[in-house]
Length: 286
Image 1: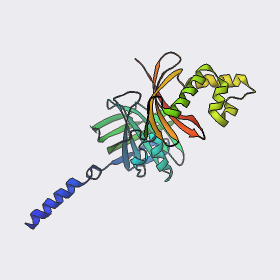
Image 2: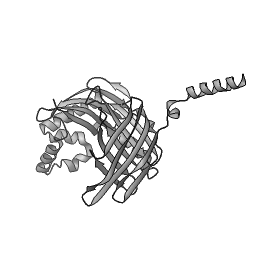
Image 3: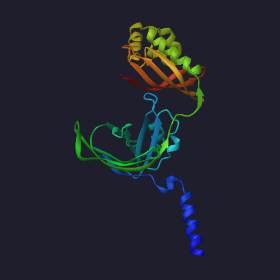
Image 4: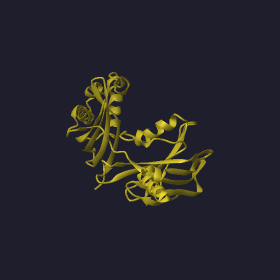
């Protein structure tokens, strides 16, 4: 009777354990760039609904030298920043693998805090997923023979098994138009399209003194032309998320050639003004 009770209690306790305990998240292996070799012990995986490709999920796997809390990246505009901020505190490093919606490798980023080093690569090595569900990802990425990069070589042998943490944007939902932040962004888009230096000076604040110098019209015109490469010619804001003095806007627009651009724009409030701080826009080819 006692054995039966103990066995039953043990079974119930195990069943109550969270998935993160029942199936641990681990990362092993290394990434070497020239003489800089990072060895990993940990892994986390973050997934986010794609704004540029509705219905698809963006998955990123991070193999790290030190443990990190994936919850600290949830809701952040830049998922990488949520991980690197933690690793910078311990002089750590990581390799990030992006997984395409079809399960193929979509790029790698090797990052080291100290001594500072970064390297991007894509399409090299053998990428394998043995598990790929909305809640769990397992697999490996191996470059068996070194590859040349100018006068350096790089090589990696990575294995990962991690629960997937949902990292969708969070905050107070913004209506169509994006509220004050959305209006500020659309005014900025219009000013760039028109080449309105005075309007842009008012929007850019102190940085306009060197970006758009009043005593050098040619330099101002050249800078506005540079802005047009990264700002749609026309745009609409369908909504977004308000996070205190920051706002993430869902944007769709057209570039100067009429191609559709879609993605998110991060706006930050500086005093009474909202200004663009970052963006993740993709050209949608049809």
